[in-house]
Length: 314
Length: 314
Image 1 (cartoon, chains in turn cyan, green):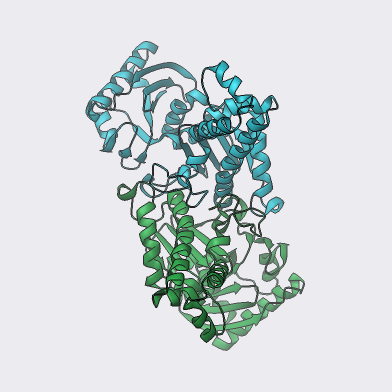
Image 2: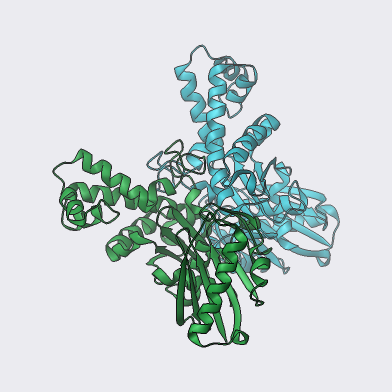
């Protein structure tokens, strides 16, 4: 039997056909049109699924289920998108609408929750029952797996780790609150921190790196730090503290077995992950008396969305 | 059938005999002797139970179970106190030791977790399945109830809400980390904040109130604020923000149905609870789109420990 995982994003909607082991047999994608009414978008997604089955030469009868990972607040039990800012959906009964076109069991979940589940089922988190997945991108997304299942709070309105506070009265966040973790630990925040440090340090290697790369990115400070640049290292170490601060709150509340770090910044690999591990190990509540929490780089990367959505179906 | 709930604290060990509805039929207590070896303390607790049964004229055969609420990290599955700072127990197999004297099913749990469960089973939280209980005392204790059960993280090493960060790089906490919620939102922190404000405001009514009460306490600023004192109101409102900051992180992660506030400060009643409710309602992630989270004063007060321990047995 086969599964389709759909990764609905603000820019594109990706779909992948997989077997039950998470091997991706075919992939397709379309551009997201946030201005379209939801019925149109759902119709497009159904057509995408049909195309995927046709291209792989697989009959509809062999499709066991479809999973969808969607950004925003998702009521997975009721099959409703409560609210998704990126695709401008509000109170959309997406499962019911989708099944008008493709009559298979359909499951939906928040995209970061799906990605977390994908890691536990198919990726680096395999074998662990309690895991927290954090993605450092435009914002800070999070997925919490407790006892092998997605934890999402009442009506899917929890597990928003990007919006735990790390600095009371700090930077104003899009959510209306000040000092959210996301405002300090996202890749976008890192870029802002890098720009500020560059303004203050005209001598820093970061200027040359940014020029060569054609832009200031989340990699600029890391590249400079690795090359021994003082200002770059300062930016990186402070960013590590920001990321760790939220991780530590999560550890002290959930005490998971592993913390999985995804998103663009996680490509800095061991250099970054080891720094996070040191902070988490040093400052977790109860120190060595309490179970060790391992920090790992997430492994599914670009396919995390698709595989996470498939994991929802299993 | 009857139950005994035992509330082990740093100062005293209280025990209560109850029926299955949580009616307390008899209470006894002894002084905690942290310098005694654990075997002695457990023997004393067993004797306390015998005394309780005798005083109520109830035969051992009618005792269905014993529950114990203990401060610190408790491995409830294994029946072991991993670490308790207050009573200086480390790796103590308390259930096994206790059953040498009284051969009944015995359950242990962290005291704040027990109190949370007690509120959901017998108190203000009755009927709710997802609740977070916060006690504002010397520290900030917390108990998290998910789907009607205590959530405590791997080996009971989670649910330490007092040690989520609210101000990165802030006040150094006893746990080794800086800026923990407990350092700002505990009753002890409130007293420190009150003292500082009094130093800065010799004109404040707080001086007169403290003199009349014979001390500066968690009530001083509240009394002054209610009487219209500006400096007192400033202390209270800032303290409300500190408490809310942690509550909001908990809401955004767990999205419980209710937040229960216990500990001495909760005796400020509606005046305090309504201020917390306003902050929680205003700043919870997703605003009105997401389920409303109600803030309530915990109701079991002095008997919370005993009833919480009994709730463990049910």
